[in-house]
Image (cartoon, rainbow, N blue to C red; front, side, top):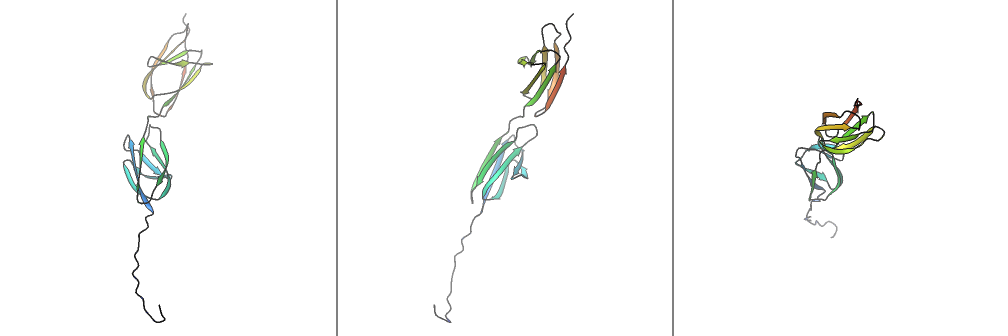
Length: 159
């Protein structure tokens, strides 16, 4: 180039992709999706995100949350599948004597110092508490997913 000379340039611009796609699905469908702590919608969800690492949480009432740290690559789709499992119920039983505890006919355990705490499947369940020399205690109980259920049982001596 010389002074006073005009040069014509034809630059070619190349787009720099700095985002990627995140697809989140779950079983059951319709779970809430949080990305980096921010609610983004419900599954099945497709969203554009900045490339890089992201924290994904999938939640639904009555189910254990799914959490993952995922990498979203520029121009690519990252897929997350969350299989949610029903949250266990906590059963806390206090009995006036050491006793055996059954749930739906299955032995759950024996109380120690009159107490037993166990994680069990939720639903309507038959609770049976028995000890030698005492009347049997039977009750149908509703155990909510993720719930804490405390029962105080007073067994009566057989006369």
